[in-house]
Image (cartoon, rainbow, N blue to C red; front, top):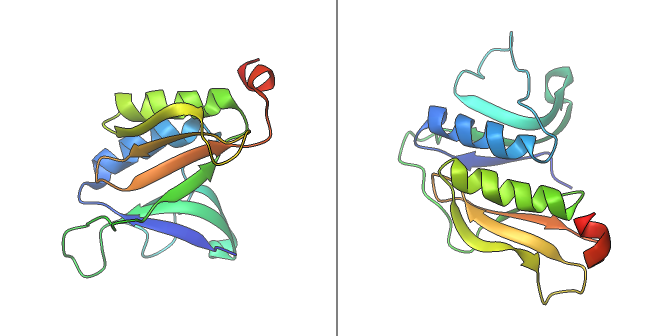
Length: 141
């Protein structure tokens, strides 16, 4: 359904440090856009290949209108984790890299297997990291 997700930033270096660290907890590294025109003010994590014809990535950039990046009330990006440990690690690394907790890792009432954390990145964008399908024992092993 999605080609990519883009979040605005007011400080590209700070955002890159934050996302390099937190996305690594989920197994993602920075997309390689070297040699392609127009990518100087963008950074992405996930899949980016064949000049974007194959893409599944989260990007940060300065807004095109050059105004300050702001957050949307009610806007949230949810990322999939493969284990409870990844959820826990994401939360810890996010806080250590300038993020703000919006909900510590744990099971949520939405479903018996909905293990998630909520954080805000240094620009205030809200992120959720969710692991589904594990029981408490499986998720902690």
